[in-house]
Amino acid sequence: MKAAIDIGNTRIKAAVFQHGAIYETWTGKEVNLLIEWLKNHRVEQGMISSVRQQKNPVISALKEGRNFEILGTETPRPIVNLYQTPSTLGKDRIAAAVGATAEFPGQHCLVIDAGTCIKYELVHASGIYLGGNIAPGIRMRLRAMHEFTAALPLLETVPEKTDVGYSTSSAMRIGAIQGTVL
Image (cartoon, rainbow, N blue to C red; front, side, top):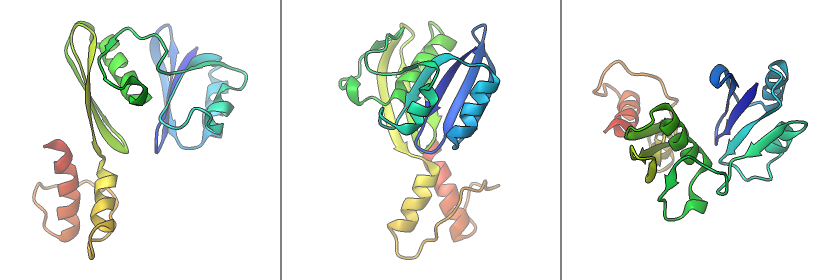
């Protein structure tokens, strides 16, 4: 079995592949739990994408005893990258673009990754990565409203059942969510 691991700002996501298809996925924050999960699936090789620095203890622990490649600017890709500063392009962003191209070959793709930040990636049907945008995620928006104002509370993300705020808390939550949609 092979694995693909995405080390993000908030969580680590992983998928185990068997015969080229996703067999099982894992999401969490504890690298020790991920290592046990990988052992249980007898994973010995794969790819790691990380938004954190490459000399990270999490990456070292995951690589120990395994043949994991670290996604980097020199890693061969099946798409053409038109990004003007490829060394600054997040590994998660290029991995999303490559994944979309593999999943939908010959089609224009808009990839939306809603994590700590919301990333939008555009890939032309011919396999050309055109670039994308980065915006604050919902939790980041709620935190900013609290930290950059005098009286707004710090809120957790809780789904609202309406599109119009009926209290300060609901107005903030709906505003944070609707601001990502529009």
